[in-house]
Length: 388
Image 1 (cartoon, rainbow, N blue to C red):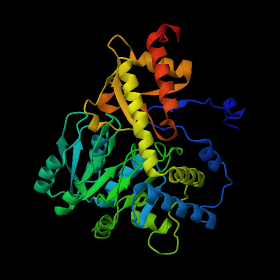
Image 2 (cartoon, one colour; image 1 turned 120 degrees about the vertical axis):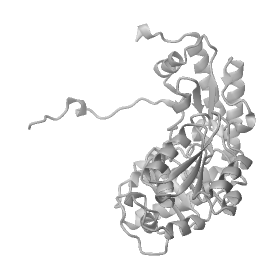
Image 3 (tube, rainbow, N blue to C red; image 1 turned 90 degrees about the vertical axis):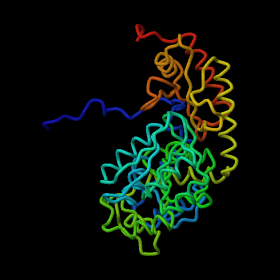
Image 4 (cartoon, helix red, strand yellow; image 1 turned 180 degrees about the vertical axis):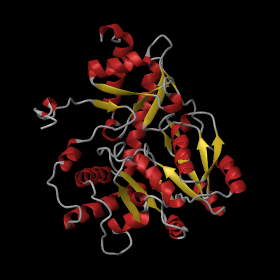
């Protein structure tokens, strides 16, 4: 052999258990991990289609929609963003994007790469866009779409959505919503609020492994897709092709790609857990956990990054520690000594804040109390760099 078998692969894989209390992924329940270990079936077998159909029903419940075109993309949440934008936009189109965190900037980059033009709506970090401000820009530019992030994870900001759908439709504009860090942990009503495309990620509140991006398209969005001058410029994201793979159009199933069957098993089970608990109970549990965490952080001397309680997401809490505390040493100590992941900032908040994620099974009082206990220890007794 020119290349010998690597010594690193001579023993089975073993990994430690960690409390994933950052911005995601969150911990997956044993029931979900066990589902992923079920026997493989072919991606075009009837058993696979049954699992996919059950996922679709679970997603319609989670998204609160009856949209027939509700599927799961075989990709991370970034793929959901790319699929939403690439199916709706063509070169020369206009999109309005609030810039108040990392994800608006990321969406703007994607939009530009597809040949469309971004009209930025500049806002301070942590400030959501108001309906009035959005309407002023939408009424002026009549864009193809308005992009909003319900839970801006980089700043831990909540973006209200109610009223934006009807406003957009008044001007012939579609509303695209990123719900990666919020679906299942905060109220979202796709049909009631007239949201046109909503996508999320499997690894956050849903508590499935990373690698899947659920997405739903309204009939209005599908009319736009059908009226394109040419098909979506990326075959893998083309919802007209994906829809046939997921049985959305009443046609015989068509091969699109080899779906990640074991990830489908896990997501199906995660959605079953959410359905069993009920959305209202899940929303309430995440709110209660977030309130408990915030109160404890303030007692610890931390300052919450989002000052207005109305604009705080339940799934992620951003904060700063007292000035004499090194956040890098705190996160390092939490991982090394306690096996607890605490999140740093992201994008414009990198180096400025810390973030604690309370998502799915981690949105519980015991998990909050554990994080606070770990923080207290790491603030008082951090591991110095010199000891590593």
